[in-house]
Image 1 (spheres, rainbow, N blue to C red):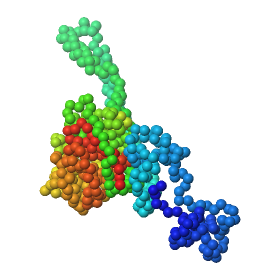
Image 2: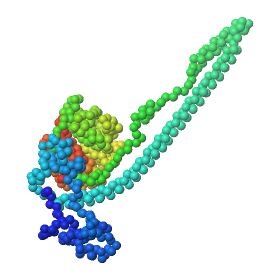
Image 3: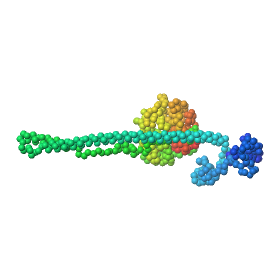
Image 4: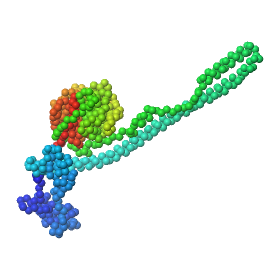
Length: 561
């Protein structure tokens, strides 16, 4: 094996011991460890055991000669050479294509198509390199420290999770109480209206009945048979009064309510809205990226790349992919400016679903695992942002907001909306209300904007090939100028990954920038011009790039070093 790990061998001697004295070994002196203290978990030579027994008389010490099996402190256990997945198989090969150790079953199941598979012995001979033990040890120590921090963060997050759960539960119950109060008020007002209508109609019916009785009584007064015994003048008067009275009765009967009842009609708007609701409130999960223990300043480089065509049969123009992100179920979401579509793609970039938009989408930003915001850029007559939910294979419009200024760039962090216009960086609420203008510079034109996962840094690009790093209060801490940031169009040419990596793209490259904004860590050459959108997923180690006027997106398989 090529690794330069030391054994328990006496330097300058041919003697090798299974166990060395723990005390002497700390001083680079190698003596046989003939005694073992279980309580101290240490081995002692003939000299050191005397000192140990003097100070620890209550400890039980086992001597090797007594026939007891002393625990052996092995550098490696017996499972080292076994495959992690196929634990009964030994690791005998190495795949250069995927940089993985293989057993026979790994080769059979997963790597039969790989062209660079060699046996371990040949791999060691071909590299001729030994393991950098010091570097590995330093890396292990660094990761150990970060994992300890992750445990503390996890404990803190558990408390925060419980608190947020209790707060949200209380808010749900409060909202339900408010809805109940509103429904109680509507019920009371509706019943009051019902009672008023009932009373009014009842009075009208009673009045009609009373008038009917009065008419009947008056008509009885006019006895036609009696009119023969009166004078001509009295007869004429009698006749005219009869006509007047019968006309009044006919008029009343024509106006009388024929069928009186109260009808109930649903408030269809309210019922349809309630039927369309799938939840009482929108509950989202906010995860602290620090718990993933990803160092965003480790260099991302390209291992391999592939091209995928994302043009659909209904597209009338060349694709112009202005935004890319990913839903929690792995579905890739892209916006196509030229064809006014939001498209859902599977991991092989096959079209699952697409929805037409009312205007040309300028960019997309992820809000929660399955909710995205789509902004319409400077060319839109009304500055708008539409909020969409991706539900399995559906795209549902939730709502939209209008802004006070055109949107050149957009970033969303835990309910805060950050937007760049031509000369200003602004903060909005998710309802579209302007909170404040964070930063303004009238001598430049701002393009893209991104926010670090912890929300402490805001990154802004402009048309002068610059990257500004701002605090949450809008103070510029760093300005980085690099010709590689130059683009042929005024576009939001920045992507901040969920794990904190900062990427600024130019005409031909994607440039990884340190999170403090002070320097470029790495430049990835694309092999194509005019990138328009970038998305990086540290979990899958993949970067997807969309281009201007191009039906293909490029997927880069990356590695971190």
